[in-house]
Image (cartoon, rainbow, N blue to C red; front, side, top):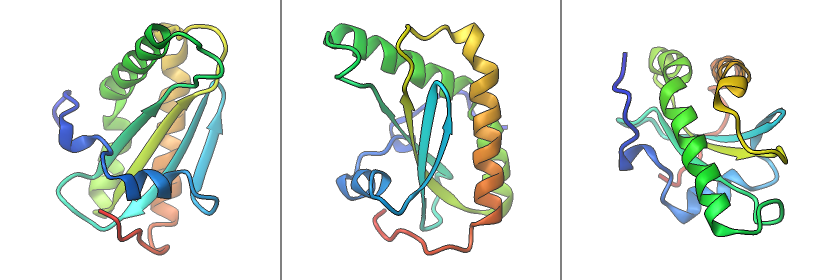
Length: 138
């Protein structure tokens, strides 16, 4: 088991990785009301870095967007072991973006099972395709 925190080293900060996450030929999963995209990185000490995105088109006020991002980070932080355990077994590092596509505010209790299932699907997809080209921008 890994620690429950979400330190700075587990967050995506490099602009090249962010642009790779939103490129056309990346891996993605749509599990409404969430959308996940990920890129396989060179193996390093951190097995998963996360980027949380909130839509300015759906939430006009910055206060609402920041609240939504805080809730998404908390949802990821609590459930990240469902994704990290399989990644540690195959020794792969990924960068993951989490986008909330729903219109209504996040209900953490209601959407936790959907989020966990999506993380497990991502882990399976990475296990199947971990031999695909590695993104060098890390």
